Length: 474
Image 1 (cartoon, helix red, strand yellow):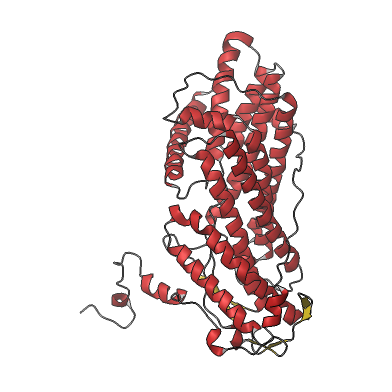
Image 2 (cartoon, helix red, strand yellow; image 1 turned 60 degrees about the vertical axis):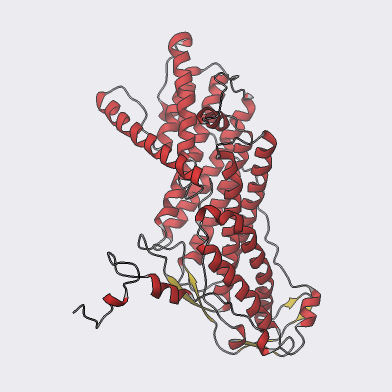
């Protein structure tokens, strides 16, 4: 369940105020128009209800893909490199100033994130391409949402959705990795935490963790069984026991451990980022726990298939601890805490189910509660079998977890292909610009929206002027 990124919005700018070109005088105008279209698309996407935003992601992606080649053309002109086989002579008139809304930084609950003032074309490029990576992650999220709907998908639909989501994760990882490598040339860190080196590195690790974990979801039969058992429309009261080859269970465990390691790296990098969003920090920690818990569960399946039911139960109890759920112990105090934790867990699970049904805010737990349901299902079944048939001793889970194997990588990171303008577009920009052609966008500026919506806590909506400095109620 990918993190629900919020796509940032930006202020309007005219590149003609900051750049001029003798070889391609229309380039600043064309870049301004493409950016104006993107800005309007981002503003409109923000106003769409959250449950309907997934269907608008292709429009956002199209606007980004239209604007980014112009952005790299401006970058090539400043750095003296060629673009589509042509040298672009670009002169910096004055330093570029732009504002983007920080969506990964810490903010006051109930209020929009702050707008960050940035300088230089490099900051504009980083925020724009980071937005592209967010869109890819959100598209993967939209694909995975179909797996948890009330109407269960067919095996073909499930495989198609997972493959599409995996591709989007790898595309997002390629973008973040490109930005991390490019940011290695910086001498100072930017003011926005969204494009800091530590945040970009964490997002690269996070997307690789998600892409690795989804390879397991493709062939993992247990979550589908739990979802089907929870489906109100399901009339099958009996089903065939889930079968999993022994070798694949051990392989899946190593893949999950690799995902957990990537998430742990992301968590460490975000710990170095100042004032990062708490929800992102919690999500990364939940993803690390989910991957580690899955690994324990698969190792338990591997042990149970080998006839070691006691070891399998110990692995499942270790999985519950790794997920952060209290495992039932022998003393009365532990049993009490287990009861309260179980009620809390059930309440959080039902709340997550409602979010999935509405399509809003779901998945913020990184699949932790869903994995907990799978572990509970297997634990209940195996403990019953062990109490009545096998009667094997259940060893402590700590030594087993300490002996876990190393993780195994599955994906080879993709390289981000820098998009370039077509040769015809470069040739057309040799002509003198028409001042009336530049389009900066028609949507209201973010600063004006803030002035209309921001009011003191406890005030009635739209009553900001009554609380302004220098005014009196009487």
